[in-house]
Image 1 (cartoon, rainbow, N blue to C red):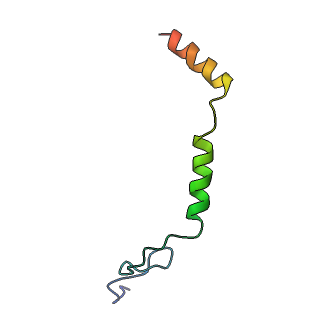
Image 2: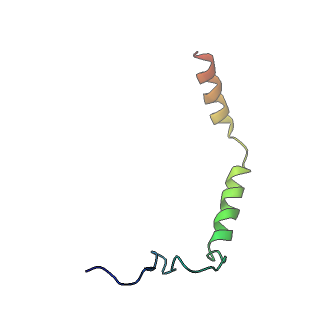
Image 3: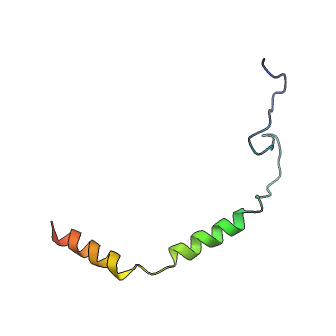
Length: 57
């Protein structure tokens, strides 16, 4: 059965017509986790593997 509502709720319950610019509560935590992973130094074993792959050419 088709809904008569032109703006059905999205999976998170938010309707497309909502003009709120609020981000979900977990977004800041996810950004902090991503940033911490990006800032980690490359392990020596990975650097060695990349060097071996480069020299194989």
